[in-house]
Amino acid sequence: MLELHNVKKTFNKGTINEKKALQGLELTLQSEDFVTIIGGNGAGKSTMLNMIAGVYPIDEGKIILDGTDISRKPEYARAKYLGRVFQDPMKGTAAGMEIQENLALAYRRGRKRGLKWAIGKDEQVFYKEQLKALDLGLEDRMTSKVGLLSGGQRQALTLLMASLQKPQLLLLDEHTAALDPKTAAKVLALTEKIIAEHHLTAMMVTHNMKDAIRLGNRLIMMHEGRIIYDVAGEEKKNLQVSDLLAKFEQASGGEFANDRMMLA
Image 1: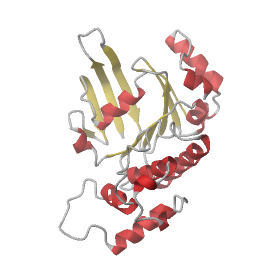
Image 2: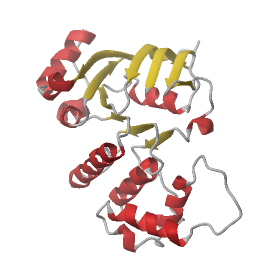
Image 3: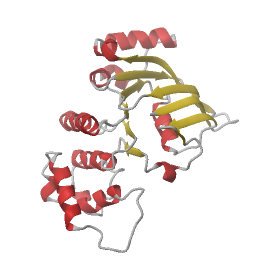
Image 4: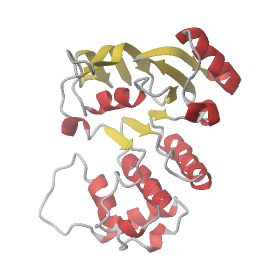
């Protein structure tokens, strides 16, 4: 479903602030892989997702999604293939628009627009069914402005919007990091449910090692723009947090200096 070949990205090239964010990255994902991604600050986790989404152009290499080379496609041209949820719950929704209007925007992504009423009755029924599955009572508030929702409700709505068109690849960039533990657990449960029910291929960046081990069928660890550990199946299920710390020290030649990761 996804192939990254020798992907390189350097920011502020030729200056004293030069940063080699990705250094010949190689990665292949199969259809329906759910990959969790961990690593210290500056490891290249979010940069990798941004490269896939087309936020920044790559310097070298290729990105192939479901057989199509998207390496040079602009961000807007990739949107119909991808779903994305950011760390900030405010980023994925339009606060001044109704819940149903936000869903309509997501539902029409990549489709041709015509001159007719924006949201028909059949469409409203569909949105109501989708919202009901979230178990947050939002199906009874479809005309409420999204800005009135809590951060957790907005993130759950963003997750629904990102998966509404069943994207070829779902990108989750620390999408529960800004939520309180109880809300984060609920959003993670929704994440797992949506990915499984829609048979999605997904990549999830997280700073929580326990979540990284528990969720998905595959785990990768990044350091200085490279993948230094890739584990799947039963081996992944049997991992402990101490194993991951030891692997990092072994592969990187140093201690895991990310306090957030250590505490997670």
